[in-house]
Length: 102
Image (tube, rainbow, N blue to C red; front, side, top):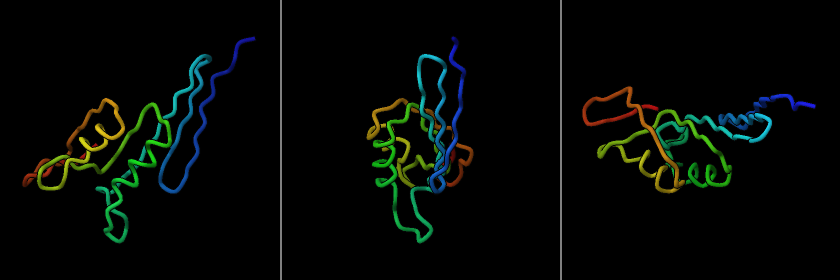
């Protein structure tokens, strides 16, 4: 009997998880808007986010509102180094020394 593919979504706060079973492997994907590594009170949360993502054991992590510049901080580099994952950064805002995007 062939196993059926399943895609499961669930939400915890503003973090979206997906679990995809392709009959042999399960992949965990997380999509998260990190709001430049700040909470609503402008308190830094970048390393709390990194700690959470380490514990999530995700295979793929998609982040939005990430900075990668000397002026705003090297968040992509921090995630890549701390999580020991490959990365790709697409800056959709490049202005006044900022690189900000996905």
